[in-house]
Image (cartoon, rainbow, N blue to C red; front, top):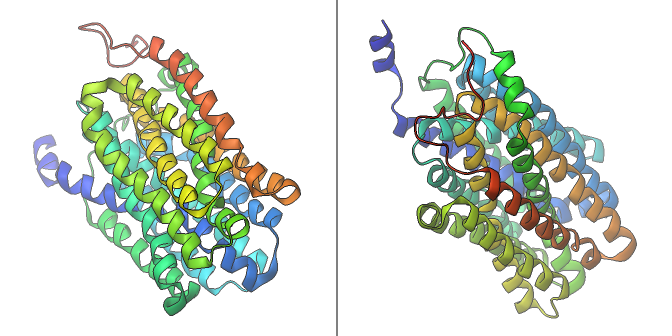
Length: 404
């Protein structure tokens, strides 16, 4: 019976393709508010402080979903969670397109957070489980599709906003979100890893391990970085450099394009550099670019800084996830869930704080947050490098000793 069931499962390539479409849509979720926020503020009439509140509620919803998805996928599998979350995202885009009040936009942001959080966690955990021998390369590779999604909306906003308009742009995003829904709903996934029951004692040991928390807090700062730059870069270009909506969106597109290109390079470089050195190099590049972004004196420098900071950010998130996925393989969903909760707390608070600072002191001051966060990432990565050594031959693939 077991062999027959295995033959009916969708192959790893098909499941990776489905995961790629899901993370593509999550990339759209991550970029959409930053791309359309200036137009929404003008159309509906709210200030930057309330705009920052949208990032707050969206990321809070992602945080809640991150508390839930790990135990769900470890115990029940990936299929239902991923299909439902893709459908939620499609509905949220449609609601955002029809919104005429700030309240409606906020509700759409909450639904986006729930759906996006499930897609983010589920697709990353699935890719990690499907590639036990090359997690770093697989997670950086799937991150390329995240980059495609994140790039697509600001690119379309920058080139076709006048002809399409923000409403049609959001309807297109809703249609795209239905693609992974169909793939998840029609694919056959492997059986849950903990189908016999959720192992609370082993999960508690994972949660207590210091490596898990070092990875989580590194991604606290990195998630804050990505949300802050992705959310406020277009506004920074418009207010401080006088760019129009299309040009400001192209600066944002350059940022996401370099994240995508950087992950393509990282998927190959990780085998040579190793996880620790790859993240350290990336964090140094990101720190230099974040400083350049805050002191940019003209539009070309702004575009260069946007591209460089995307390049620096590219490898940090997926490579850190690969470290955790390797060390906590049997409960990867639970481990990723803890990490995403902490990471999304950073993603929730950093752009909100940037909006508050920008409201009182200007957008340039608000973008000092990534400078501080990149410095913190460097410190944490040195500590992770000491703990995340390869396990000895014959050791279990988790950091705790299993009890039977």
